[in-house]
Image 1 (spheres, rainbow, N blue to C red):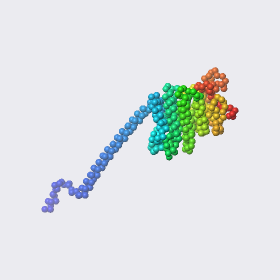
Image 2: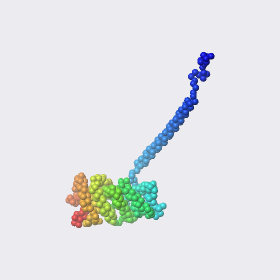
Image 3: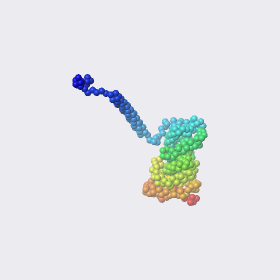
Image 4: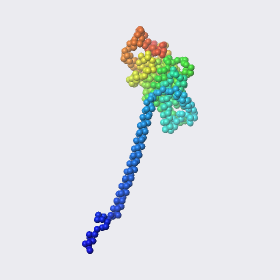
Length: 426
């Protein structure tokens, strides 16, 4: 019986084997882990695809916005002309701002946000700097001979009043209580911005002053006299802000040096600079804090300043004034401002108070040598004069005739030297 049983075949097949319970559980566990892994991999792939599509869409939108922005500003310049239709709106804007600055209610005063939370202060500084740039743009575009000048002059007057008040924390009407120091720090931040290249303060002031007549007229057209004096005084005030407000700050020496350099480059190179201003403003230009710093800046950074002076735009200067190099006007204006005479033709005057004579002499020598170098490059003054005035006679007379400005016939460049060679000065 044993023999036949050994040859029996299982009905389940010859290869079938019994599986233990542990092996079955292990196989089920492996299959479950495989399904979980497949599910997680599929989920991760979908998430990556979703993130990539979002990133790609964001990038495409950003590139499109950038292209639209470049296309939009391609037809504009940084200093675009202010349209006549915008003047009324801007006047209303500055009237509201001036009313806000004069308000004693902290809820209504524009400057209140400057002493609030850091985030509000950051937003306020951004807005204030944009308003400063707008005011300077208006100043640069102010022209008393343009069509419809009355409305634009009024706009410039409002803008300058706002700018002067904004940069003077003592003039803010709102009560800051314990935040007076915060207000002063904010104002210093604004003045540092004004003195930097970001605002082009001195470029805009130059564009305005160079349009004024020399000498400054005592009588102007109806409605222009008060506004012209106000705008001119405000322009000089804001151009001197960095000298006075940053002078007391130990960390502001570099900013003051930068402002002094730009004052020399853009303002002292204006033909008849002092004569284009009201006489009452000359004392502020002759003050030690301004004049001495300009002389020191010329001595310290003479190479850079002289290089920048040679690049100053002369398009708005008359043809006869362009015969004198820009550095020549800087020399003449310094000679005039360092003497106490307010009348250039009288030939008299004393040096201004607290003038550093050694520094003054060094700067005059530096500028005079550069003037002579410039004149040699153009063939000398006599040759220039003979080309322009073929019938001129005498070297002294020809030089003086060449340097007469077209805006006035009773002023010449040589008058700058009369106070210097007078017996009182020597």
